[in-house]
Image 1 (cartoon, rainbow, N blue to C red):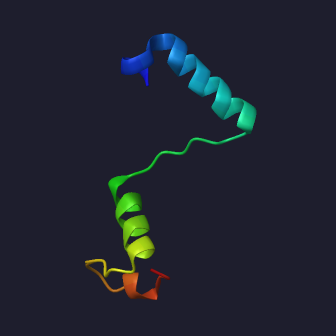
Image 2 (image 1 turned 135 degrees about the horizontal axis):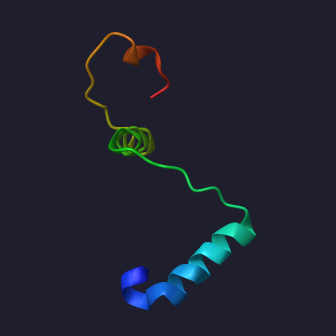
Length: 56
């Protein structure tokens, strides 16, 4: 957004986010992998013994 519309565009997006009451959260690559596996129903490769106990 900043590259295409500059600081004015970024301010508009930030205002929209605040007005709508959205909360921005950090997302790690692991979050993205888990979400993709759950959304597609495809298996997720993992290591360890605790992962099979999750709902993914």
